[in-house]
Image (cartoon, rainbow over all chains, first blue to last red; front, side, top):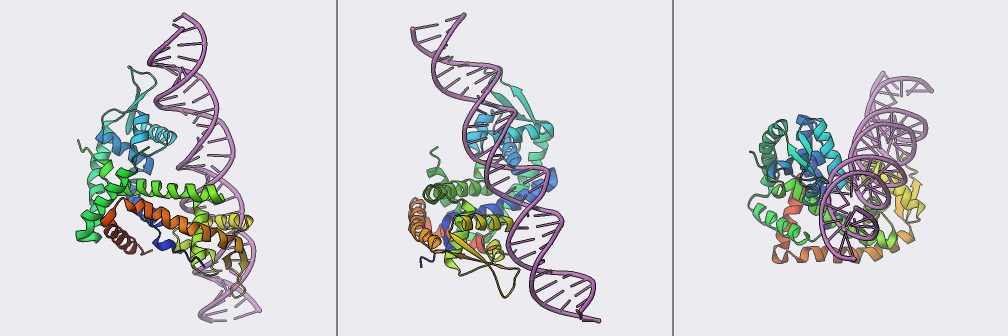
Length: 144
Length: 144
DNA sequence: ACCCTATCGTTGCAAATGCAACGAAGTCAA
DNA sequence: TTGACTTCGTTGCATTTGCAACGATAGGGT
């Protein structure tokens, strides 16, 4: 009779919440631009950084190399991203947002912030504490 | 120049943390018993509830019907779970832990609690606030 | 009894995923 | 230069996933 309470188990709670929150936002950009979650991540990162290699995104954004590579290819085909061989090191591919890509992120960024705010609204005063804890946990696990 | 900061975006942070935490624990039960995450969830839920249908697990545990069904089949093949047609309503399948299944959850439960504690240890005093916020967010989104 | 409809669990199938292996390109020392 | 070793991005492949059927069963109204 161990009677394990899955509902109160942290990894389970985090998985469920993360899935709900991510899918909730994914519905917005999927409907508007037809991109997937991996593609969203690549675009979002590219908007922050300049021209960047697949490898850099791979380690900064917690996605498999192949996932990044395929997302980048789809984004290129859709005209949101340009791929170009780095002339200094020809193994590297420089990814960069096109004008169309910038237009997309410009439209999506406020939607993202609004969505985030709507999720946090439930927490009220406890929101800062929650976010601080999140940062702490993420920072500690950043050893890979 | 929208310059969207993905690292500070809540859905992204939650996804990354949830993946890290879940995989960290998954490594433990995978190595010890060779079960997958969906299978772990089914077993954990069965340990808490009595004999239960696939449907009940499906809605209580945030997994697709087919995912539950396939996990249950694998668990049955491995001898951890028994499947039986409900005599009152022959559409339903009653899932129940076997003795072997109980033995597994009995061994896993303390490991799970220990793992959870090790994750939360980083937070110190802020842990209660974090967990309360988590519960709040999960409860609010429970309308499906 | 007979439909009509809803629900349950399984299965088919296309798409996504993780992982390993590959070729291309770079590095460094002999 | 050659050769051994590393790193980068892509691709092949087996597995997993989500979604939409499907057959079987149940319930309700006529």
